[in-house]
Image (cartoon, rainbow, N blue to C red; front, side, top):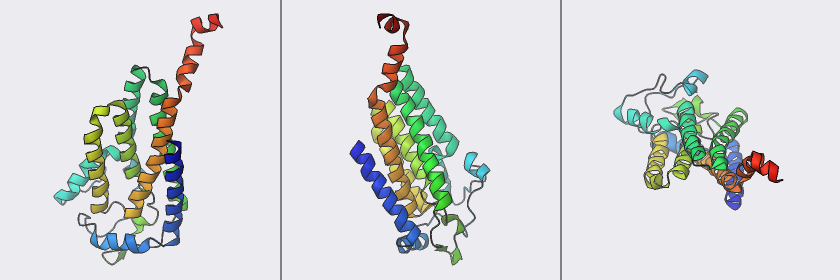
Length: 227
């Protein structure tokens, strides 16, 4: 998993440089013109902090395809994703898997922190949609929704392995709909998935480490007496 994390981190950093330099602008511009059929009306401003935190606040449910996209990608919303990951963590904790229980919330928080920093410092060249400057795409790399959807899928799959198939299908649908609905450009989505790969690989490593489990064992009265 360490090699996977390192490779994904290197790809993520390289993609960030490509996006910032404008080398990927032709791809994003093509997608804005031809691959966002569900986008409603002219491009709007970036979501406010309140809209980012409150699920479906001011969400647009017309046309019907956009409503489907809003619902399918809802688990990637900030609070909903946190709740789902915490449910998985609680179940892992109940099974005695302390390291895994701590790893997935930590992965979500760490990944979200990197996402916020990148969006603050990285501005891509303007992307046009419907003949207008799509301001919402200026600082939209990486996609937080893609990041959180992927981490939710990984956390739930780690907790309930039998759900891996359905979770994989849902994640694929969510990623495609983020693009079709005009929420993100292809490089945004790819950046979110690469960042999620780094965070998920780290979570798996921590979950396998046994550090918390060994620490808990050492703190037991019997263990201290034996020492």
